Length: 247
Image 1 (cartoon, helix red, strand yellow):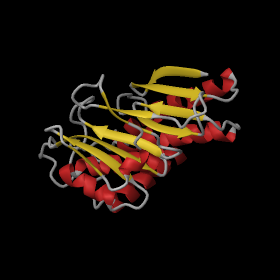
Image 2 (cartoon, rainbow, N blue to C red):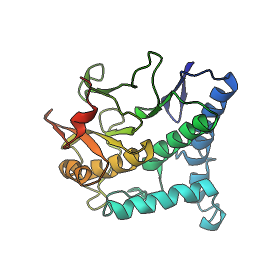
Image 3 (cartoon, rainbow, N blue to C red):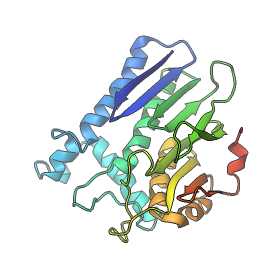
Image 4 (tube, helix red, strand yellow):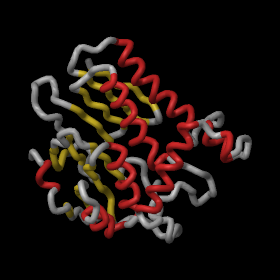
């Protein structure tokens, strides 16, 4: 069973190889709808925008918002301040961590329901478990940041999470908190494979904000690998990224 819906401004795909009820699929998509309603900075009625307008205080935040904020603060510390959820316009925006967090929770929902072979993809960030319908490892194609119809690498995460940060789809939406006026244009794509999609996503965002140094930051993290493409089209990968490459 496979279904794609546009939620959170992006295509979200859930594929379940095992027998799954329509109700379970509906629950997975309802979860993403709820995340969008709570965290979207494009929805005036979202909890994050109510906080930004001062209509609610930190003491009134939901448990989910507190959980994401705690993850954001930990990531900021672990990345030496390169992850920061305060935008240049002063708005608090945790979107750099929310997607991976939401995918991980959706994957847990499926797993807790007894599903063993599944794939959750939200805007190219992926958590897969088990095997695909052919009984093989799930495979993920990495798109060229210059020609999105072209696949430049195919990898098998084998239960790990995978996330990509870049400017080639959404334009410049990540900034260097240490030099907010500086354009991040030396790197156009950074794909990270980590222990799960949340870990991959939060450190992909932080590493992209580091520019060309981001690949070295990922290299320093145990259990993480990355593939970086710069504006000239040159690719750099961490020491053991090749272990995941199929073609």
